[in-house]
Every structure is written in C-alpha cells, then in structure tokens.
Image (cartoon, rainbow, N blue to C red; front, side, top):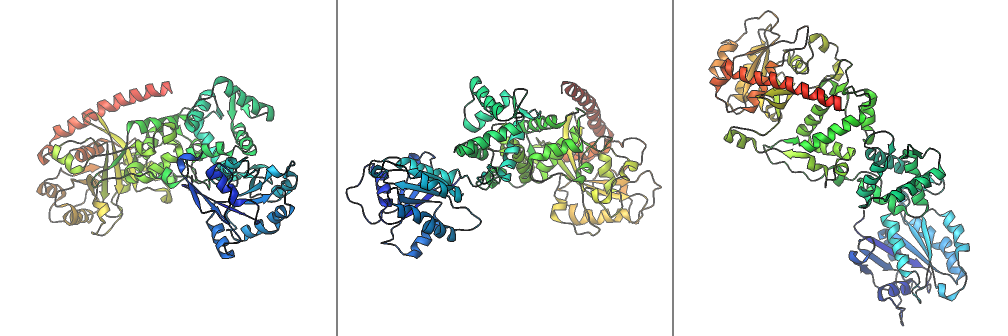
Length: 619
C-alpha cells in the first residue's frame, strides 16, 4: 500500500475548488475565499485509511500551464470539479480536462479520476443524467460525488473516495468494458484460494473460510453470516458452492461482486494480506524478509517449518504413497510463478522405483535449499503462504541460524543438523557414483541418468550415535589444483581417487597440500571403484602411508557396483567426522569408534523406519 496520497483539484474558475478544501479543513463555509488554497496535509491518524493525505488546489489565475502540468505528474488522483448549475463547466470535463490529464500522464499507467459536482445546494435536480454517459465513456473515472461546500454536504466523502481510488484502485482488478476481473487479479486470487484450501479438496469449508476471514479481517464470521455468503453465491451460480463449501468459481464470483458494488477495498485487503502490491505482484518485503546470517554460521529449518512442509506434502500426496508424482508435484507448485524444481532434483534426493520424489527426498531438498540459499528458501515459503498459515510475522520465523562453528569446536559439541562434505578428485575418479550411491542407487541405476539431469549435490539422512543428521555431498568440478574458496568451505572433505588409475591418487595429494594441510577442515581419503583391480599409485608413498603421515583415517574403500543398494556405513563415518572434527585422530582410526557410530545408526534407522511406518498409517 502507498505511504501517502496526493490529491489534485482542477476545474474551471469559480466552480468552488478552493471552497471545498477550506470547508473540509475548517468544517464551515469560509466568509472569504482566496484565489487558491495552500497545499494542506491531513495526518494519517485522522484519515480512514491511516495514510497521510496531501490536498493540492489549482488556480488558473495564479498558476501557469507548466505548473499545472507539473502538478498533474505528481498527483496520485485528480478530482475534476464542476458546478452542477453550470452546463459549461460540465462540458469542459470532456472537452478540456480529461484530454489534458490523459496527455500529461503515462499511457501505461492509469490516473484515477473523481468527478465532483459542487454547489448542489443551488439546484433541486441532480447532474447525474449528464454525467453518466461521461463515466461510461472514460473507464479511468472511479466515481462521481455531488456535494456542497456551503452546507458541507458530502465533503468528507469526496476526499475519502479520492483516497480510496489511490489505495484501493479499480484498474488493476477489474475491466469495466468486459464486466469481469482482469487475468492478473484472477491469478492472484486463485493462488490465495489454493493456499486457503488447506486440505486440497477444491472447496473452502466453514473452518477454512473462518480461518481466511480471521487472517484477512481479524474477525471470524458468525455461522449465519457464513450461510448468507454461500446463499448469495448459490443464487447466482450453480457451481459456486459444493458440499456446503465455496468453490474457486464461487470465491472469484464473490470478489467480482465486491468490486462491482464499489467494495474493492475488501478485495485489496485480501490481496495485500497475502503479499500483493498495487501491480498484483508479490512484494519484495513479503518474499524476502530481512534475514541476517553472521559469518561462520549456517541456516536450517526449525521444527515448526518441517511440520508445515509435512502438511503441504500430505495435502498434495493424494494417493498416499509417500511420494509426489509429476502431477502431484505440479499441483503443489501451482502457487509459484514458476516451477522451482527441475529434473536434477530427482538426482539430488531419494526417489521411489518410479523416480518420484519421496517424502524423505522432499524434506531433504528443502533442507538443502535452506542451507545453500536461505533467501531462495524464504521466497519459496512465501509462495506457499508460510507466514499466513502459521500466523507468523514472516517466513523468517521458519529458519534457525546456527551458532558460529568456532564455538562448536571450542565446546567440542554441535547443535547443528546439516553438514556439508565436498567431494574432490580428478575427472572420472568416481565422485558422481559416490553421490548417487548415497541416495541408494547402484551403478546399474546410475547409468540410466541422463547427462543433462545430473546434479552436483546429493543430500540424505544418516544416524550418528542415535541422532538423525543431514549430510550434504557436493561434487567439486575441477581438474586443476586451483579450486575456489567456496569449494574448500565445508565441514569435511572427501579426496577421491580411482584405485584402478595409477595417476589418480597424486591429484588428491596435491589438492591436500595446496588447500587442507593446515588441518582446519578434516579430510578423508576415499579409494573409489574398490571392486576393480587395484593399481600401484604413481606417488612416493602409498595412500595408507600418506594418511598415517598426515594423521588422517586410513583410506576408505567405496564401490557402488553392487546388486542391491550400496552400503551407507561410509557416509556414517563422513558425518561423524563432520560432527566431531575435534576428535583425536587416534580415535578416528580405531574400529570401536566406528562401531559405536554405525551401531547407533543401525538401531535408530530401524526405530526410525518403524515410527515412519506408523506415521504413514495415520496419514
């Protein structure tokens, strides 16, 4: 909504422009009327819409044409004043004033006009018979008000309608020629309907209508009022009400009715509550609330956000198979202006046998977005209506900023739930296979992935000491020793070499010495493709000796060339090192350390699966 309103009064000399302003201010007809009133400002606290209003007078006797043109360009709404007892002043509305204003305003923007018939105290008849054809001809005319500066009739109403024309304009909402709402308005209200239809059954039931009413107008509807609203719709359209609930057609019909009856402030209140500006675009402030992240901190979704996302998933998982089919996913994202997830998402998270994103994969993708690009996450939650449905000030309430990583190291414990591992190695060493193996795909399944649908990220859950954590793998694309700072910024690094390629390990050693020898980021050497014949590496010492020399865990063998699902034990180790980078290297080498971590993972994975199945039965 605009922060202020500027109203300009124009018209022929002696029609009473100045008298109208002075009568408004003093609440009495002035004994002496100057040629022109000074610009006045009505404070926000005394206006109906709580917005400061500037009222500007124009005097042909005191001002030049250039000054008039300048005032027209600055105005938000223009009142064309005529005298109801002067035929000439009425004719000048169309012969002079409307053409002049249209010539001086941007063709792409519509200047709202109010026709003001002053001096109604001097005649017994109305001027509306002459004015109605003008209003029908010019769609920019919002309304016509007949008033009297002398007896104060309709003075306050005049300026209220002028203010309303700016703050609640008809132009973006409705096409008078077609007598229907404009496409942009229909699109916005359709999104609002889908957000408000919390069970996704295509109708707004009484509970949903009451929540909508309370959200937009801070008060619920009485049961009889609800029935009255539905009866109005029933009388006007056969498919506006279904199963005693309001359909989308009925919802759109109601707003068309509001606009046609001059109550478009009702529709604007709804649109603005759901984040729309005067151009029916979601505002930047709504989509991107202020959110500051201190250095060395990360962002994660909190418990309330995960519950919200679960409700959105349940709303669209119509066949209750715990996965989103392409149609279900498309339906979920109908409230977005674009499709946010591409084909690469299916290779970033877990999917079912049909290649559809599972519930776990869906939650993981949201976790990834929050961690890598929190502003994008806030935008997405805005499209879904998080702040409205969760009754929060903004969707920033969904995100937690973790404490500084240096504090975690000092205290030797972390409260974080998401950890990033960068996977580095020379081309064709098996990095992509590791990412896809983490998602449960063996080599045979990986060969079915199209090149253009590959992803540089993979995210899944692991269990360490009974705690569920998210591990985010990022494949670094580089064949040189010079990788970017962002490629070295993570919680743990996997340096991958191909056991069958004698030149592969040497690249890992050069990367290590160039970027990680300071020990700030823990590293793991990964012997990929361990099912193949192991070649002697072209390096001065063996991988095992290199790890021992630099106090790293011994090389971890990995292969996904298996019949079934690749083992997740390796990823438990990676997550453990990310969680406990302060752990003594000697501990990392002992088998009991890994046994404790993986045993906890196994027990809680089984328990987690049992709980998950119980939840599915409830859903």
